[in-house]
Amino acid sequence: MPVRRRVNLSGYKVSTVKKRISKTLLATAGLILPAGAVFAAPQAAVPAPQAQADAHVAPGQAPPDEKVKRGAVVGVEGSPDAQGNETPVVAVDPGPPMWQVHQAEALLSFIEAIGAEGLAPADYDPAGLRATLAAGNPLELAKAATDRFYRVASDMALGHARGDARRDWHIVDHDLDVAAQRPLLVQALAANDIAGTLASLAPTHPQYAALKHALASTDKADAATLDKIRLNLDRWRWLPRDLGNRYIIVNVPAYTAALVEDGETRSRHRAVAGAVKTPTPQLMAEATGVIWNPYWNVPKSIEPEVRGKAGYEAVKNDDGTVLYWRQPPGPSNALGRVKFVMTNPHLIYLHDTNARGLFDTKARAYSHGCIRTENILKLATMLLEEDGGDWTTDKTVEVVNSGERLQANFVKPLPVYIVYMSAAAKPDGTIVEYKDIYSRDKPVLAALDDKAGTMTRAEASEERLADIAEAIEGGL
Image 1 (cartoon, one colour):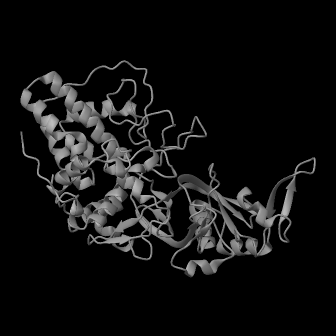
Image 2 (cartoon, helix red, strand yellow):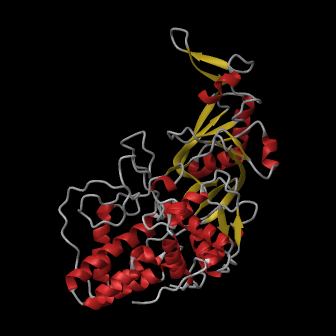
Image 3 (spheres, one colour):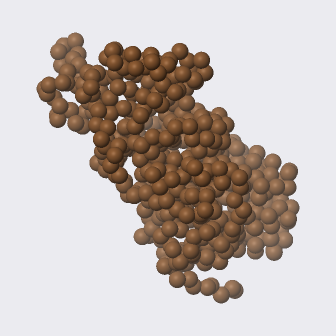
């Protein structure tokens, strides 16, 4: 039996694997700045969001009566869905496909090097796979290798932290659902490319590559920085692998919003996000246009503060009862002069503001959840002019000054991603950290330190943490 090497946990984590930084990574040099690292990516079409069958269950989170599992064999009851939640599967399990020895060895090598992705090799039991290889039983090898392939593929494509660890997360990732696992494996075996197939599941966004470089470059004694990198790597895996070739991305801790097209940041804006008591959720919504001179429908939570005050009006039912209060368009309107149309159940959108002085402050968590966006009129006009749109700057100014409430639609709608990345990496491997304003980092890190991706860090045993430390510090 091998002797366990005990490791000082004060400086654990991260492989010493170092990789050559691609031209794509170097291209991010102008995108990741201390003033607000917002992210660019060469992407393809964005998958449509999945409707939720139960409105009380947030996307990406398991209902209370379900257990969270990952990497089950396709066709077996309890296989994970795209977010790792247990779901029944009706299809009959065909059994694992057969593996050649060199293919299983390639899988073992990938697992042993997965610390470079910020994941713990011990979660995939490399010792067990090594023992099965040595035993020489083809059927047992097929079973062991298939199980580990599914677990690794699931974490590479969808992230390791699941369930409640993803606080206020409402983006459904369709990169790898249970039905796609077996075809993916069969293709990998046929092509004799296990490692390449698994690596292809990682996010294509340049920030993911930059964070991996930072992970390899950071002093292994700096556990806090290593943890910060690991948990944000996992957050990138929660997102769709490709965000699209044209999108807006808002990073809440950095208080920034950016329009990205074909991997280039076309426009970057300072933003005001939700206050701690009214945090901005993480979501994706399609922006279809804008409303000039919008009404502000007052949220029920703050309605008592405005009820009956000058500058607000009641919207009433036929019987005279008040449905809600609203603020008419005008210079004092809380939404300013423009609001993006981006339908979502959380009623979160980008908009102008009548309190533009807040953009000059460093910490900008003041809103009721929506994203107040600096120079949003310029951004809106830019999008309306594209693809033959009939809006110009002069027309925009005319309508805004008229006070008329008017909706203008984009020729091509685009997705808006609102994310929570508490760290960004520069091309030289250094890290820009942002304040964890909603205290969302700790549960993600705890899930990364748990094999199932759901345990709180306090519940993780000393032996479990030692396993992670040994695997990652050992350069596996």
